[in-house]
Length: 228
Length: 322
Image 1 (cartoon, rainbow over the protein chains, first blue to last red):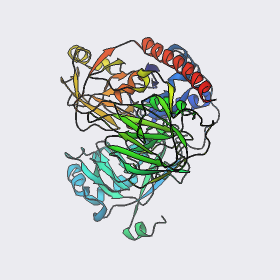
Image 2: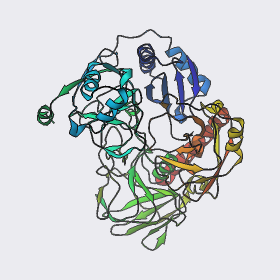
Image 3: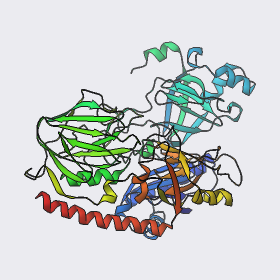
Image 4: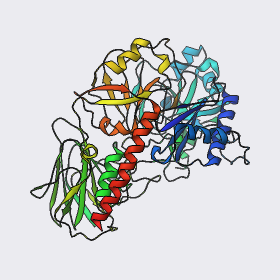
């Protein structure tokens, strides 16, 4: 465990040094829960991502770095209360995806790169179980680890100016879903009718770091009849 | 009670001190790019420090109120008038019903923050009244202001207005006029400082960087010597914070501001100190900026001193407004 400053109003905890999906995320989630439980004065946000946790604080409300570091270190040595239902790493979120041509402009490119048929790409993409390694880029965008290695495809040379809401895409060794219309450079292979980020929901984001995710192939008709 | 936006200027948005608690879901902190300026302006009109005000950028913002309000502003070299009277930065001024308040940006660019007694009473979204301009939520209908908008104002004004029209007392000038010619910003080293060559580390603290045109509330893009890494290669994304100087593969740093993403994969060479973020919020294309390295304890000490001065200032204003 390595703790270093991130400017003068945040700290970065390196929970592990090398990213291995399962072990790294379990360790990061555990440390995040310990820090949440400790309710350290002045801490505004805890952001787990891959191997690290960002601790954001109100610099006017906190002591010296050494004092904060000591609070963090002691929090990370406490024993845990039972896990909350979320962020225990066992929740599996099922995401329906329509992989039909109209929603999958880059499926052929991914298939060509993998030397597989488009159907085989879809089969492998929807049979794997993924884990949310971090959430960012835009509100609710989860970076999913666990993509079958064969499906890894480099990002597009020039990003699209506009990727539609719900686009399911592959970028390098990761897959993810665009929570809103935005620019994006990942290869689009399908679309989900689920809302990834909804201000009327609590919490608004569907994905949280550590969650497990599976994709379920649906038809265009199912996509259209999906309750909004 | 409300204020009519007769002219919205180029980019005006409702902002408070920002949105916390949802950063783990990718929601930016946002808020006033210079939170200290908004705090000072809010104190001057008797508001909570976190009351929502307006952030003005370029052009002319013209407001008309339908009741009496105290107003105050801080920031760039703007010109602000209540009817025909000049309101200097850091003073409180009384706007009476049907007066126009006119806020004109300098040609050289910059930002200013306006507080109105009571505060702008838009609904809280995820715990904040700030406008998330990329996410299109919060603030006034999730967008920047347009001509003809009517902003609701809270009636919770804390004091009777009987002062002269413009207060004689004011906030310290270093807090209220934050625009500097070719400023020097104090930095502390970033987590990835050691990933950069000694030449890059040296260049960062000895060279002037120009502000590039495609800068916005997410970040100021800098142009200068190419900051090279010892070894190239992708890094895992990590949390980032406003003030971070991150360096994409082209070697031209980006200074992240309030609307920055919550995580980033570019190496972090340094961070601008919190006390200098107000000056960073005034950087504009065409400006030049230099960096001066300080230690973490110096950065924290500067901030502690500012907060101590702020507490004294707040208590002093309280006496004037009672």
